[in-house]
Length: 113
Length: 115
Image (cartoon, rainbow over all chains, first blue to last red):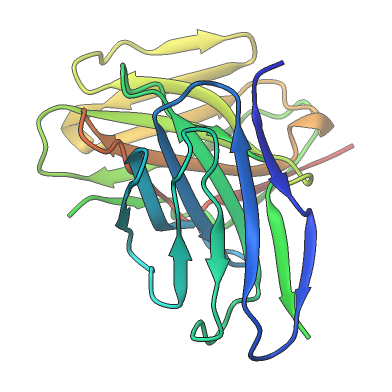
């Protein structure tokens, strides 16, 4: 079945460490997105990519980095520059053909310890 | 700038009651899309409906119905005869037509259906 796989489901990070969240899709979607969700809040866009080897900053890109070397993959690195990284991270993809909204992954919950 | 407001942070009702979730949006675009997503405790967002700005017809899908009123910039969601399985966080979202298709989300409404 086609879908988006995010791993790991839970991730713990020590202060000062970089961590990378994985996002893989087999839907042949062109566009991919990373959102952050804090408790009681909506989703905020971190980065997005419309094509391979190209990506743009979203509303809260500071302290994050991404790459898009393959159409299927859009990993997100949370760097030590991100001062408050504890959150739920959701990856999504969409087809550019029509605005049918996103398909979401199941998310990664990141906690700083 | 685009903005979505879900003023109801939490709603709690007894099973079989009808419940309406409110969504108000702001955009300068003449063509746009509106969405509702459901987020169960597992965390994944489940797509419920997409509506484009030119289609103001109400839609019904089983116990779910949506009322889109461009004049008031609202896209409300009603669950009829609610069930415990409807308990979740519901998000309303807005996207531009074409382009990057970035979604702007509301803050979400946590719906609890009590048996």
